[in-house]
Length: 218
Ligand SMILES: [Zn+2]
Image (cartoon, rainbow, N blue to C red; front, side, top):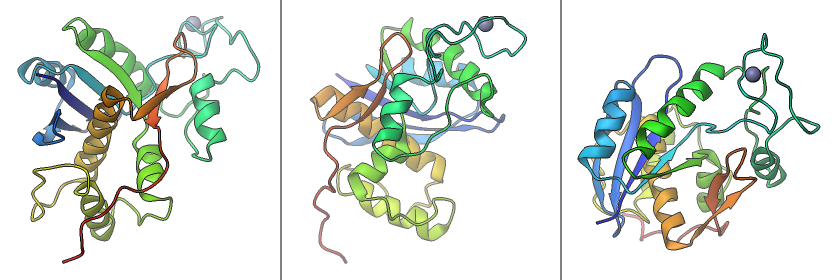
């Protein structure tokens, strides 16, 4: 049975949001994972077939690391991954993965975690939940850290996902993990595409940039 695990990976020692979907887009599990071991264990316990991580999982061609002290250098100007240039060309801003990145620890964590999950046989993909949400629901979204923003996102996710608890106060990390898992399911269905160059790490985004039908309000 296919299972889609979405991870909103934290780079600052906080727990990471996670969500698991089945192939009917039913929410099987959702919560917070404290560390890498917990994430690997979640993938194993749920038999995850695709794991979508909200974090760069590759480096620009030519770089072996993000350490400014290392002599490695990008092979091509401007030294930015093709996937990131493609996302930016669609109009969605993001942090570029260079030696000047302010999320070096997060990128290094994602790149450490990836082979641990792949060793269990899962396909690991890089996703960008902001782009997923903007493409599906439009760019005008309330700030995700506010209660209003969380309610807004939960209502929209419920148009495509089954089994959400509409009375639960999902954290924004959990909501982003749900968006990540949904992107993994869309990719498996052929409803999402890979942007960029596989050698540097592709970013998976929905194929369509229009909102799915929402159920009647009430
Ligand atoms: Zn290096």
